[in-house]
Amino acid sequence: MRTPSLALVSVHDTSTHFGRLKAALACCFIAAAALAGCAGSGGAFRTTVAQRAAFDMSCQNVAVQNIGGDSYGVSGCGKKASYTCICMYSVMGSCTQPVCTLDGASTPTSATQAPAAAR
Image (cartoon, rainbow, N blue to C red; front, side, top):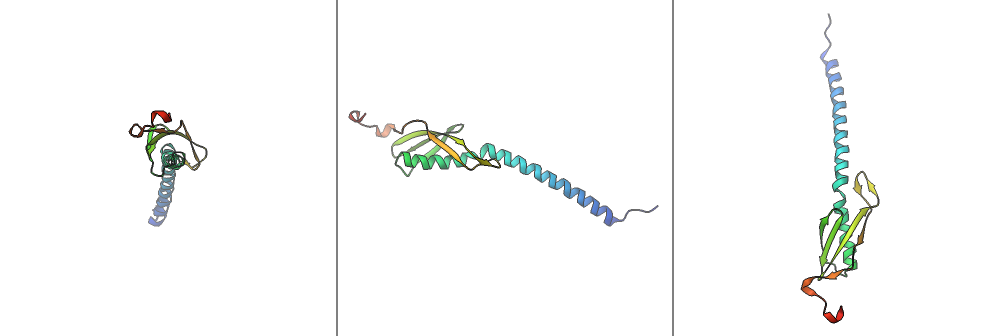
């Protein structure tokens, strides 16, 4: 009875192991891409909201915070506003074309309320 050479067994085991490793890595990559799609829009939305708010409020120093889901609150220069965002186009779960719209007009914050005559 002839025993298989170690080289043949080793090559076979390595190729099988490598194939399983590739499959496992592919599954991990797909899962990571899917999870990034769920959480990956936040950064794109924040950047877009900050740019829009800076223009809408005529203020370059704005603070952006998530106020629930895809809604963001912005404050700066004595004003505040809220925006809602959607993703128009994404690649592998990452939003590449966010669109954020102003929910309402920018309003003065309580610290710098407009005079009654100006309302």
